Image (cartoon, rainbow, N blue to C red; front, top):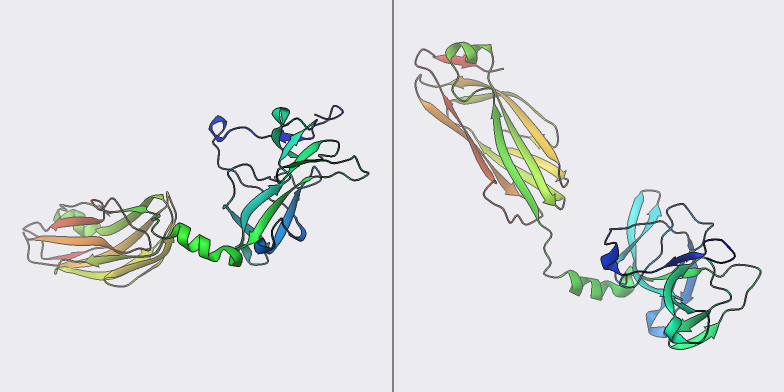
Length: 283
């Protein structure tokens, strides 16, 4: 507090409030930061004139991603590098120092790379500034960091049928098959494909998918988000000798994410034709 007004926030430990956070800041310019080897870095100020969801980096946030908003959406453009300044005290005694994100640190001492300096009050406030490096500058580091990491998606498939053992009357009134695919996460699965095989007595009439496209034997989906589900309905005609069993099968054929739970990647639906049936129309 300064003069009875909130002037920023002290930083606590991550364990006291381990919450995923995000925020939006305005780009304010570029600067060389402490070392020529760091190159030109992007700056974003933390001030109480910013957006309601303005954010500030904290200790341990280095290396996180920064995005720039463009006309076509958000694009990865920066890597969190530093906060300047971050450590403050009301005197030159480091024992009383604290980490903080301040709208205005004028009138305080701040740590400048190991040296305590005084920021005199000015007409304009001196807000803390986030510093971000260009993604291109850190592409080698990013590549080495994510190499070998896996981002799994637990995909599961199941059948929903009007009935697995229809009577002749039930079959004539309408029999259909539905395939349901779910993603239990924790990541979005992309470029997803399911392979379907039909028993020899099934002839496909029509189909509709809530997501993606379907051919006779493959259902392709561009993406399925964490917690998402999609359904494929297929209407058929069944030509099969009465009293025989027939099994349909669906399996996960492709995904851009590894799946550590493969027990739910295959499902079957068994159809039994009653002895009195010769031709069953499924709608």
